[in-house]
Length: 212
Image 1 (cartoon, rainbow, N blue to C red):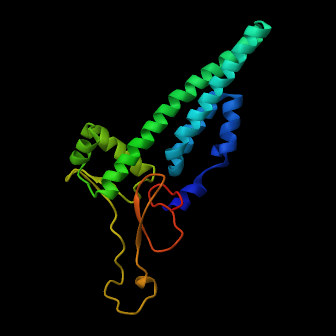
Image 2: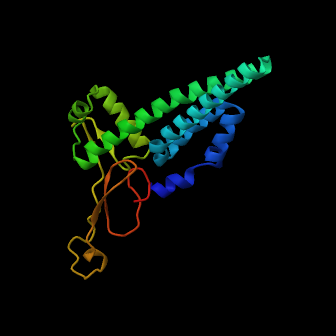
Image 3: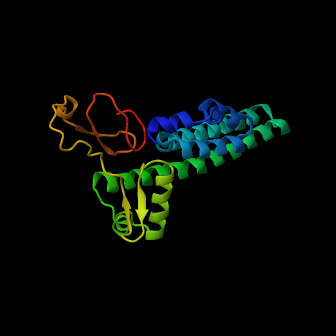
């Protein structure tokens, strides 16, 4: 399944408009939708953390403004409830943003070690990540299931992650082919940091789906 397939699978229920409205109307539902969006949209997993962090700061700003207004104009119970709700929302969004940002940084490091440094042995990856082997194995399985390493699997006998080999069809074909003469360039994805080999001026990252 390619990156475009993942984008087409995204339901309108998980669109950014629905997520923002849900956060405003009933924030627990909005947070749940953010979690689901990250699970089905690889690129969102690398950028949504910072967006959620900004939303939490916005909530704290509203709380600060509300507090100043109350001090100047006097205290009202209804206003207090509104301010308290924004405070709770801000704290919840901030906690969520910490996890999303942490996961994004961790996934970037996994991609760097596996794709850019060609390290596949899980014990070695765990050492580079300074994490227990069982945690790394779980993280890699999650990344595989979420489409970051398409076609990959964990080989339990060799304790390594196995990535699909590039197609080698027609390797003995001597028929001239214009496309075969195009030299592949290595382009580093600005979103996840993976090194991609591309033969066209326009492409998308194989690992997170963002434009290259």
